[in-house]
Length: 97
Image (cartoon, rainbow, N blue to C red):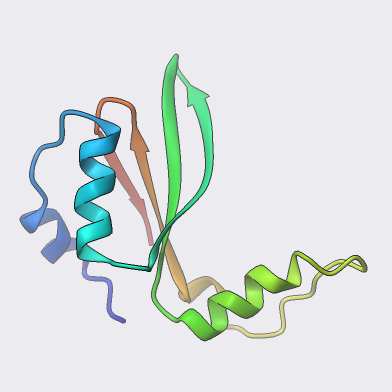
């Protein structure tokens, strides 16, 4: 799955809230937009999502965290299997490719 940041940003409306942005991304990437973490930064709630580009590689990566003996990354494409999207409570977006 190609993740074209320019194309996505051109299609993306201005969001008023986290939930509005989350719904839009879910509609663009059904089953591939996954909440991974949330935190408070500069007094605002921020939600961290992964957009999964290669489900097989991504699943192996996530399963490696479940192993008690730790995990080892052996596939060089692991970090290319997803992109990170940060959405704050006001609907502001940041991408990490």
